[in-house]
Image (cartoon, rainbow, N blue to C red; front, top):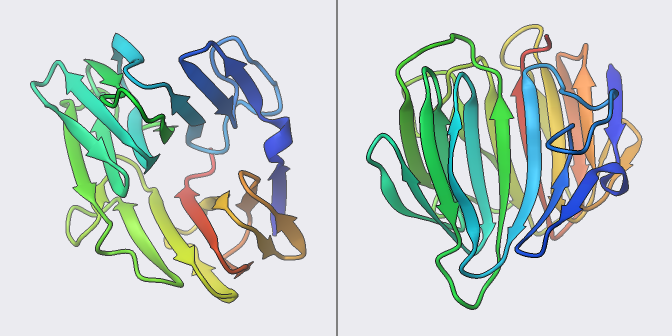
Length: 236
């Protein structure tokens, strides 16, 4: 097993008032040559958006864009005609493909929204832009991993234009979780949203992450009152 540790304290940080954000990988004005991507995983931003503020209309192409709302709400509007609110417990997936424009705002005038915005390089370029959104609030069972996103177009998960999988779990007791890599050659990026976990002797605390390569499976000892996100990703 090859491990790459990304401590939370070593993430890039930018606070511009309405947006307080941490970058796991090089983004915007923050550049670290050792943290440009992990395989096909290009961006993992931990964003806190102030009430009634947000990102104006902007463009993307040829990127899979995933938004996971951890707390609060986010209002979305795009050039495909989609408009609505994403709530805590919901996940949004967009294939930017040949090109989209979208905006994201915090619709609350009182509460900050915390979201993870994640970009994944696509498997196929220049596909027709696509949007999907789903709540996993009822699917999340204590002390189990739940698949949020998968490369198959069947089942209860959202589809992604890449051989990647996103699984997440909330744990209220100390639990050992065995994760098996589903696509041979893939790696995994484990991000601790809250609490702590230990993988092959490496202890991860809140917002720490561990990239794992050259492993068919790995065991995660998750502490009580923790939440983890596992992103299985092609390693190129």
